[in-house]
Length: 399
Image (cartoon, rainbow, N blue to C red; front, top):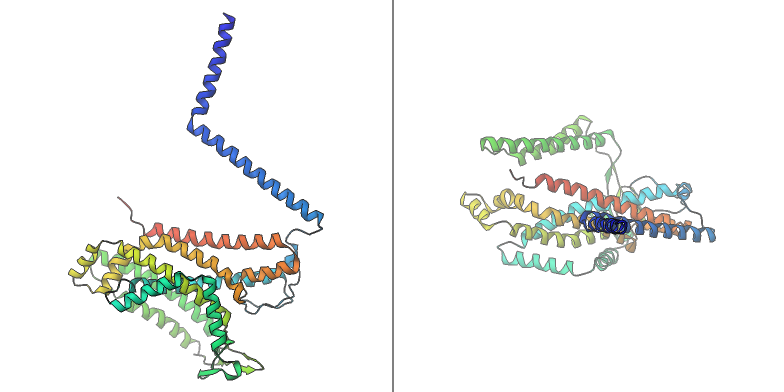
């Protein structure tokens, strides 16, 4: 009897263990724990091995080098910078340059891509074919080659500063860039920027109110004309209230280059042209596919109500296509931001260029690369979060 009981007890234990492992949720948790442990072990091994090798080679680690003087010049900077500043200041210059290029590139690529995408659907044969040729050409030439082409074109075709073209008073075009006059510092310009921000908020509120009003009454409101009036009128009123300053800082040729005013450099221009033209080709296809995905009956219904083709596109097709367009367009925004790292190939001082110089001077390869990775990851996640929020905001909500 005792042997039978022990046998029965062992069988019962094995049965419980087998039933425990047969549970899918339990197996999933066990597998995740095993994989997670393996990943942590691999990370620990790599970090320990790296630190040991660095110690053996007497290479310092950490971010203390950021407080040391950078001792190198940066050709373009959105914030004040000199070689006497530290490496952290140089890092900020590269970061702001990258953000500046990404912001301008995203806006211009969206506008150009939308125009090209709509043009591909035009009933005009020539317009549609030209848009198709544009898309097929720019999407099938590597971006780096396009950057080289635009940089070589700008620096090779335009004259030297001493023979610079002077199409307008104070405006000079040469292979060093486009030099233009800029207003001299005055409180009026700061006040105008604030007025523009206030006007943009006011137009957004006005647009929201006009949509609610039209939904309730069926009466349209001239949002476009009134909005333009607010955007233009309010800053002009503020400008006049502060005395309407007209003093300009004019560019002048000194030595081999122009001093004063503002200058659009060949490196920046080539980078923006390459990024915008290349990314716009992909956005154009996204816009075209989004519009095609909307039922043709929507267009026919709008035309039968007496709307023009432009009104049908603006009021019926694009709002519905936007729900299809946003997700893949987010990927193109991320690609444009990451592709801006190719700026180092044509000499524009973006984040990668600045940190590469820092790496070469300090030898802090791991820290420099980690900073690059962290910045691009943060920018990409920020763009993705914003676009996902906007996509959820315009999504159809089922009742």
